[in-house]
Structure formats: structure tokens, C-alpha cells
Figure 1 (tube, rainbow, N blue to C red):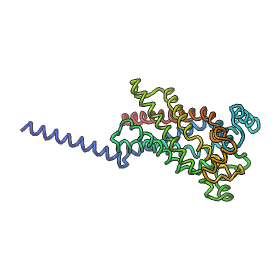
Figure 2 (cartoon, one colour):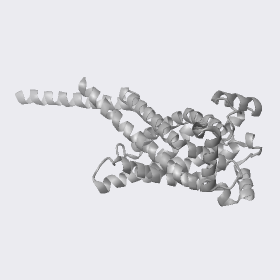
Figure 3 (cartoon, one colour):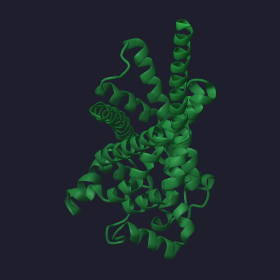
Figure 4 (cartoon, rainbow, N blue to C red):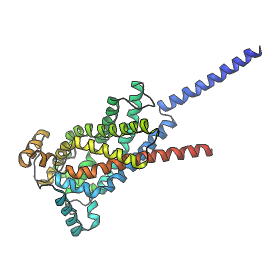
Amino acid sequence: MGRGVQEQRASHAQGEVLTLASSSQSEVRYGGPKLTRSVLNSLFSGALAGAVAKTAVAPLDRTKIIFQVSSARFSAKEAYRLIYRTYLKDGLLSLWRGNSATMVRVIPYAAIQFCAHEQYKGLLGGYYGFQGKALPLIPRFLAGSMAGLTAAMLTYPLDMVRARMAVTPKEMYSNILHVFMRITREEGPKTLYRGFTPTMLGVIPYAGLSFFTYDTLKKIHAEHSGRSQPYTHERLAFGACAGLIGQSASYPLDVVRRRMQTAGVTGHTYGTILGTMREIVSEEGIVRGLYKGLSMNWVKGPMAVGISFTTFDLTQILLRKLEQMGYTAR
């Protein structure tokens, strides 16, 4: 009889554990506090990562865009001269012109991209049976591509505004709102989405390969080092490799979208992706046209992506530690 009571109690206790586990899983799956906290953490970490990375490379980014949208020949020497002349003419802070528009765009973009990547990894992991583990190769690429597409679609007009501010004198547009109003009034609302298609096509290999490379290098590192978490300098190196591969693969489409975005202020009438490519190649050649500024991107891109991924990871780790400390304190 005593044994029967013990078995009954054990069965009851086991049932309670299963119920708690089940409720915990459903809470995460269907939008409970744990999922909400995870999403908010990812949004905040992504926003901070994007802001830190883009501010760090803003002068190089602005210089790259200026060369991308002009027919002037690019070289490291000419890029340095442009930066120096801008500094002498308008002062040090002018090198960050358009960075406010960049922040308005990059903070929501990076927040959405990193958060979406975490959610897509969870969904694909559940679908392929790899929940909590590193995804296989193709789902790993898909998670990054879909995250990039999601972020780009939701924030595209802000990217358009940022490109306009980067290539125009400060007298032309006084602030971000002025850019929106003037483009809408003088060129039509559709102009805010000019270059949308090449952006979407370019973000698939860019975001896909960036996240794929970074996650793959972290996985290889964990298998060979025996450490689950890389050091900070290792994260920066992994992110730099990810940026180098991702941006090199999608660079011609990046040039095309910049030309289409800034056509209204450069005197060109770029209409389609193929038409823009043909015009660039006929006037400037393949390498000097479609890959103009790529060497600067090999400096700027790896820096930005490395800082971005590292900031995101370290912020996530910090937030988890703070969460654990708060839980322990209660």
C-alpha cells in the first residue's frame, strides 16, 4: 500500500513537471513572456549593433557612395583626397553628413534583421529538427537571407533618403523630413522606392552569406577549440570574413541601387536594373563601373560587419547575465 502511494505521488509529481515543461514550451511558442523578452533583447541588441558599426565607418561609407554614384575613377588616393577636401571645406563633422539619416534607417533595419534572424533560425530549426543546434547549411543561408529581406522591405525608403543626403550639399536638404517632402513633391512618391528591386536581389546573397559565414565560423571554432564562446577578437575576425564575402558577392547590385536612388540629383535617368548596368558598363567598364569602390568596401565592410556581429553577441550575453542576476535576486 505504501509503495502504491509512493508510485502515485511520483506519478503526480512527474505529471506536474510535464505540465510545467509543456506550459513553458507553449509560452515560448505562442508569445509568452519568455518569447517577448527574447524578441525585445534581440531588437535592442540589433539596434545597438547597427548604430555602433555604422557610426564607426560613416566617413568611409559616405565616400564610397559618392564614388558609386559618379563617373569619376576610384582609387585609394582619390578617396583620401575627397575625405581631406571635405574636411578642409566643411569641417570634421561633415564627414558624418547623412549619418543621422543612416541612424534613422540602420537602427530599425539592424534591430529587425537580427531579431528576424533569431526567429527564422528557431522556425527553421523546429522544421528541420535542429532546435537548439546549429542549422544545416541551406537553412543557415535561408535564415540570413530571409532576415535581410524582411529588414530591407520594412525600411527601404529610409535607405533612399540616406543615399540622397550622402551625395548632396547640405544646402539642398535641411533634414530627413525635408528629403522625404521634397522627393515626394518634386519626383513623386514612387521615387522613394526607386532601386527597390536591386536592393532586394542584392540583400539575398549579402545577408545570407554574411550570417551563414559568421555562424559557420563560430561552429567550426567551437568544434576545434572546445570553447562554446569565441573571444571578442575572434568574433571580430569572423564578422570581418562574413562582411568580406557577403559584400563582395552582392557589390554590383549595390552600385546599381545607389545609381537608381540618386538619379534625381545626378542628372541620369536610370530606369531598370539591366539598363543601369548596361549604361555603367558602356561608360566606365565592368571593373571600374560595377565594382567601383570595392577596395574601400574591403576595408569598410569587414570592419562594419565585424563590429556589428560582435556588438550583437556581446550585448545578448550581457542581457542574459543581467536577466539571470535579476531572477536570482528575486
